[in-house]
Amino acid sequence: MESVSTIIISEFSDFNDLSEFIIVVTRLLMAAFLGGLLGLEREQSGKPAGIRTHMLVCMGAALFILIPQQAGISDAEMSRVIQGVISGIGFLCAGSIITRKNDLFATGLTTAAGIWFTAAIGVAVGLGREQTAVLCTVLAWTVLYVVPFFSRARTKKKPVCSGSKEDDSGNK
Image 1 (cartoon, helix red, strand yellow):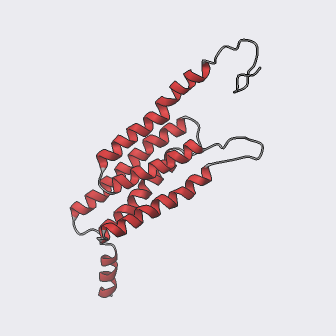
Image 2: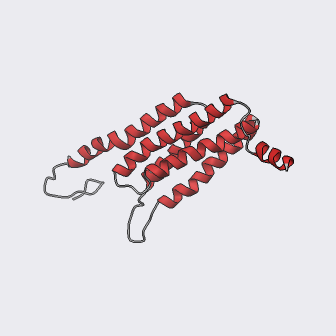
């Protein structure tokens, strides 16, 4: 019976010391927070991928980086892990893009790009690049929240027509 308890205890002892535990907890909480900020904006905009999706994507990407780091893999192997995260998240992003036969354009491209970028932020957090992750979150939030104000103002200002229509070659 004692050997069973020893096995169980060793199975649940991933962390070598308290500092490793604190690093993992801090990075996962940071990923949840940063992903949640981007997800909050998307949810407030009425988009389908909101807070929970972005939090899970960011934490998942960070976790895919943290686990191999704990195992002590090489930089070359970490490169393959990052490539796998990027490819895998691409499938989730593809599912958020909707095209209809009668429409001339696809919808969900910004949502897909946001999910993809959120995964990149998670990778940065997982690698311990928290300052880069915070900067990228601020920039992404600016693109998602601030830029639409400028693009809406531009689309409201339509050029005044002179009454006759011309094609691209200048012919009436």
